[in-house]
Image (cartoon, rainbow, N blue to C red; front, top):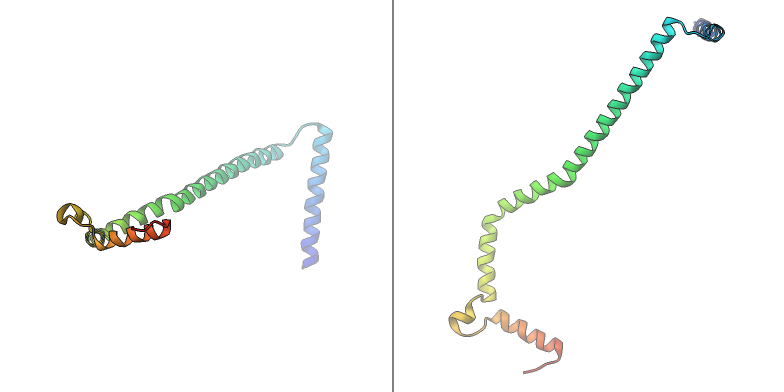
Length: 126
């Protein structure tokens, strides 16, 4: 069985070599060879088009993953934490005593601690 497969393969190779030698002697190709050559050229052109298309889609997918996905995730997180952000800003204003100096005439405890820390760090004392 294996011997017959190799025998058929050897016969096909010898026929191809004989055909090529005959074409070289005639200095003209057979119609079948012309057909195979044009088929190979068209197939190679289609393959290059396919490779270009795959590379382009790969770059587009990479751009989508690296740019659009983080952007949409950031926007979605920003949207979901909107209510928390408003509450946090209100608490932050209260802790820092924003506008407290204008309304009560004295700084908040937070600002006093910041001021003391800066004076200690710079070596200045009241």
